[in-house]
Image (cartoon, rainbow, N blue to C red; front, side):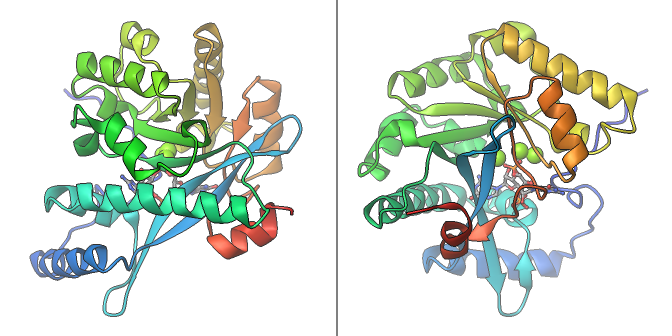
Length: 276
Ligand code: C2E
Ligand code: MG
Ligand code: MG
Ligand code: MG
């Protein structure tokens, strides 16, 4: 029998939602137009240091509002973009837009401290020239200001190639995080070889860590492992001060979640988080 796969709570609907064929058809057409016409928007969620409470960076998260469909979650449109061959175009836009926003904050005298992280998809990661491509798209900002996030399962599609690409990225100066850590199946042998500097602890372990001893143990173990590998930890989905306190006690470095701040449009993010 199969072990029940842990539900990745970042995208709670992906498994249960039954898409009508028609909705998918309509959605893929409208998504294609939206991507072509640059109608998607970037929101920014703060990441903070758990000891000092200071801003350590932000994650850029994509938002899509369609007049007919309303708000569509990235949990729905990112997989669709991957299936429809739109993800590279979207990924290019995302990197360009992230770099543009960083420059705007910089020249407006409200620089973002730390890094701005963007999510990459496995299809982008399959490009052997990805690092050079990213460098071209983000030429206006230093690589050390950009964090690249890839989920654990994306790393593990072709782990040997992933090892190589991660080293190229790190040599070029980019920061690199393994996203949704704990939900995939990476072997410890590979984890050690990936040149990632950060592990993001998946929200599904954080959510019930106060009530559920097993989840607490998993979080503790991930932090210990990251420390042993000299990687930084960022906890996802921190919604309460109790979670934040416990994570800090456990030695987790940074956190991201509604307790600290929701993803916000650029101007609102700057007003709330960036001081001139
Ligand atoms: P992710 O990279 O793991 O991003 C974290 C997700 O957790 C975001 O969902 C964020 O809004 C949500 N979140 C943050 N804090 C909390 C919290 O305290 N509680 C809860 N319940 N959720 C929280 P979002 O924005 O819906 O994005 C979902 C996923 O879609 C992301 O997961 C990422 O993998 C993907 N994604 C989003 N934008 C892009 C994009 O432009 N390109 C690619 N390739 N993927 C993207
Ligand atoms: Mg992410
Ligand atoms: Mg994540
Ligand atoms: Mg996640």
